[in-house]
Amino acid sequence: MASEVNRSRSIVGLQTEQDLANALLQTEDVTLRWNPNESIDTAEIEVAETPTSKISYPWNPSDPSAESFLSELEREFSLDDWDDGEIAQRSQSFFSHLDARWSATDLKTTLAQKFVSVPQALLAAIARQAQKVVETSNSLADQLIECVQDVLPTWAEDDLQVLARPLAYAMRSDGADVVDATVNSVRAIAWSDLSETEQARMSLAIARYAIDQLGER
Image 1 (cartoon, rainbow, N blue to C red):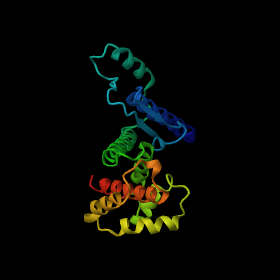
Image 2: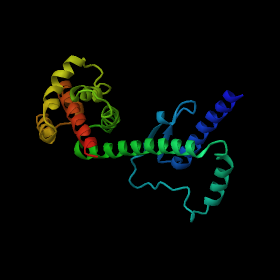
Image 3: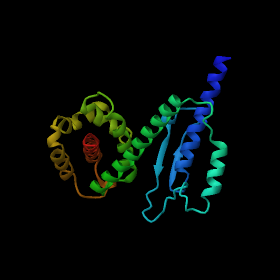
Image 4: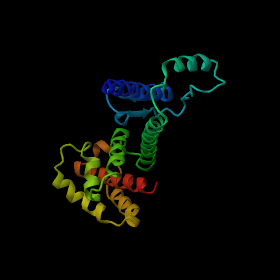
């Protein structure tokens, strides 16, 4: 009987997390990808880069549709089966995860402003990986390689190690200088016209810049 109750609470917990995520992020400019059978920590959130768009806040009391929205949400959202400790723990976990996702979005914007000639998809991929690797105890060289492996799938790890070495061995205080030196050594032409080696060096420089940015936050 106890195991069945715990299972029911687990199901309710997952549904509640999903309802809360949908309530916060249900707009045309925000995309939430999440398997309800998995933890909210597996969620992926993307905010559309449309400067002229307006992301509405569904709990704005001045919004004419707020009353019906809140009424519907209240019918679906219930914490009756949770104790105060469980509510506090799950909400803290959710909002910590949400903060991390917004931080990743901020990092992507920072990279886009710094590396204007680099494809947005590549910057987004490096930003996502940088967010993950800074939480590990791996060496800086290994972190740089992990950041770029997805965007440089044809490169062997040993070859990336050679290119990453100058960026990884520079002191943190010299990080900006070594990144700028690497960028300046790459031809100022379209990304698609760069050689594979130039793309790899630039990608590693972006990864170093991203990791340094996260370290300052």
